[in-house]
Image 1 (cartoon, rainbow, N blue to C red):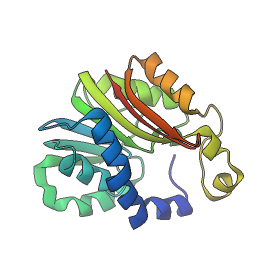
Image 2 (image 1 turned 120 degrees about the horizontal axis):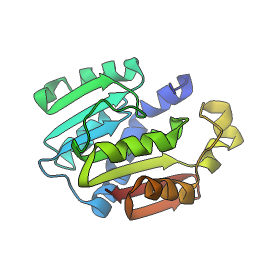
Image 3 (image 1 turned 120 degrees about the vertical axis):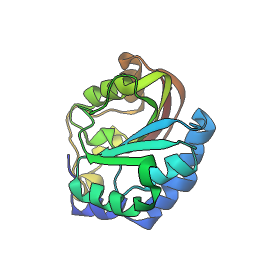
Length: 196
């Protein structure tokens, strides 16, 4: 699902990048550890801030990343042009990841899965492309946020079959993940580290 005008502006806001770098990444790193010299994937890469975090904070050697929105991929290409062969970007879909089985040491999801109508299929694809022992680092908006009248007026999300914190944990476990760390805030947003 492509972002509407409001969400596009929101995710391209410097405040979002600051929160991602200094709050989300810190918790994910503390909870799941680094990926030194690893090969990582970011689903829904946006303008490339997450790729920078994965390289610089988590220590990945290579990052593959994709987004459903070609505008975002163009922004990421521009932002990451000095990273050379360490980064590979493309337009893609998280329910059909163009990567072989067990290709990645880590997969990062900075708020993408809640945009996907068939979110369980995306979780299964993430599981498929992770190596055994590989980790998913995820931040997700939860059902209470998505169904909030203000959020519904400003953003566009699928409304059917949305998950709360426990349902997302259940979806991860049903796909085969074991949960290493999890937390939620006001049942609006959740953070997760899960291992294959």
